[in-house]
Every structure is written in structure tokens, then in C-alpha cells.
Image (cartoon, rainbow, N blue to C red; front, side, top):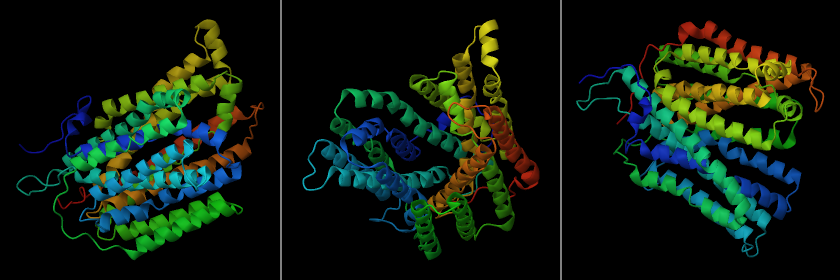
Length: 497
């Protein structure tokens, strides 16, 4: 029966659940659940360790380095087999690093570190956890491009639209797995931190990477051609890039965020051009246009911390209510991804991002209204107060961020160059993270123009309106400007399967 793209039904991505997709989904699930011991760790560090605030800030800077080096790790995953494996071995190594880190933290919390100080063990364990997550994330990203066949059993190319739809379904499941892991441990992690000693919580946390181990066992690696040789430009460029960003973070020169953003954009653009060397020019232009539109969509500036301060001080939102909003948001994001993700991946990218940007601006109106006293009127006339409006607004807007990521990840998967899937994912993911950084820099400028301080919220309405309009204008402007180039004339990159 020939491939065809029919109208997707509800929960369409669930059709992609099988043994081939299970390994990357289990790795993503473990990544989402890796924060199980985060609350216990926070309290243990505060109460038991002698680390100062500057020391913790320096550690935070060091912990960004493995993520900055993700492009290098991804390239190693693509080009350097370990014991003949470019996938299973790396998953097991990453999971082993996480288990070792959790056991080390348990030993430190129990006072059984021998001559090593608990502070030194904590620093080492923190680095091991991040490195393990980065390695596994690179492998899982690559696997999501390999679990969909590009050819039929007779060796003929499959319909590119069908391949893209199936790749999109896998990306939906990946997002759901990450969110599902985080959602599953959010409540129980807090309970465990309150009811159990930190050492026991860390020991339980050591079991989470076993999900990745199960995925590695289920993984069926096919016989492949010899992997591509490592590219020194990617390895060297990525390493120098990470070192430069770390230096900026540690020494904090004037305009460090802006310098880091421009440096990062230049390096990543060069590395992307290197990786796309074998792709037809027309497809490269389409991919560049799509990357620019996605960058603009993701660079929407947030209002900043002043909005949350106002919600706490004026609306009376407390920690418990913020926790409820977070749980509701995550749950509805999972539901929205499953129910709508299958349809979204079958629609044009420009249409999806345009509608999501418009909906995001529309759903900011209740918050803007409350800044002008809307909640007083609704409570007096309708019995609907600020908390009810906040709950409804969260319920409606929660799925938007994840729904915006699904077509982005699908596009990355569709055009992943054969033999360099992990490298490609890491590079484009870095570009998307830079968009968030650009949005934060933009937000800093808006906060300078409309200053907000704790207890002084006079400029907050103008700030929120400016941030909302700027985000909408960035996305729609990029779509209108680059729309004609968004549709690629070529299908998905062929894969050697």
C-alpha cells in the first residue's frame, strides 16, 4: 500500500510507539525525571555544605560548559564508535556517569566520603550529572532521526511528506516523554525531600538512569558503513567557543551578554555552514530562512521578574499557587502535544508559528487587563478573581511553548545530514538557545526603558505591553519577510538505513 498523508486523528503520535522508538523515548523520560532529587539537593546544599554564594555562582558557570560543548559531544557520537557502537555505548556511559554522581552524593550526605570533603564531592558529582545528560541527549536526538525509514522494503524512496509526518510524530513523543518524566517526579520529589534523609533521596535518584539502560538494551543498532572521520573544525571550533563563553561568564566584562551572543551566532553559523556542505543550495536557502523565522519566534522578550513580583505582592500568588500553576501547565502541555502535535507537524511552518505567536499575544491580554484592574471588576460582577483568571490563562496558554517546539524539532530531524545527526541536532539546538538569550537581552533593554522595582509597579503595564507587541512583531515580521523561502524544494535528507 503506497504511503500517503491522511488527516491525523487525535493522539496520532501514539502510533509511533514501538520497539524502535522506545530507546530514545526512554532516554528522554529519564532526562525529564532526572530532577527527582533537586529539592533535596537544594536544601542539603544550603544546610550542610560550606559553599558560599560566589562559589555556587562559579559552579553554575562551569555547569554550562558541557551544554556549550554539546556540538563537540554530538560530533564524537557521530564519528567515534566505542566498542563498535555509536549509540548504545554512549547511552550506557552517560547513564553510568549519572548513577555514579547520585551514589557519590548519597555517600557525601551520609558522611562517608573518606578524605574527600563533601563540597568537593558535590562539585564533582554536579559535573558528572551534566556530562551524562549531555551525552545521552546527543544520542537520543540522533536516534529520533533514525527510527523512521526513508525507503520502503523494496529500496524505493518513501513519500517525503509521509516521512516528515512520521518524524514529527516521533518529536511529539520525545517532548511528551521529557515533560512526562518531569511531571511524574515533581510531586514525589518534594515529598521525598521532606520525609526522607537526603542520602536516601540521592540513592533513589540513582535508579532513574536505569530507564536509559533499558533503552540501550532495547536498541537495535544496524550494520552501518564506516562512520565519517571527525572534523577538526567542529571539534576545535566548538572547544574554543566553549572556552570563550566560559571566560566571559567568569570575568564578566562590560556588555558580556551581547559579546557572547554575537560570538556564538558567528561560530554556530560557520559550523552549520560546514555541516551543510553537501546539501543542495536551494535546500540550504530554505533551511536558512526557516532558521531565521524560528530564531525570531523564540527571541520574543519576556517581561522579566517584575511581573512575578507583582503577582506575588499585588495579586497574592504564593509558592503553593505557583506550584499549582506549574503542575497544571505541564499537564496541559503534555495533553496539548498529544492531541494537537500530530496535526501541527503536517502544517506549514510559517502558518504554525504565525498562529502560535498571535495566540500568545492574545492570551497575554488577561494579564494586561489585570494590570489595569480587570480582576476587581470581574470579581465584583462575575465572582471571578485574580486566581481564577490566572488558572484559566495558564490552562489556555500552557501548551503554546511546547507546540511551538514540535515543528522546529521536526524540521531539524527532516534535514539531518546522514552520518551527522547528533552534530546537526546539537548545532541547531544551540542556535535555538541563542534565540532565548537574544530575547533576554532584548528584555533587559525594555526593563531599562520601563524600570520596575519591588513595590513600584507603575511602569509594569507599559513593560508587559511592549514585550508582548515586540514578540508578536518579531515573529510575524520574519514570517512575512522570509515566507517565500520557507518551503524547501527538496525532501528529507536521505538516511543510510
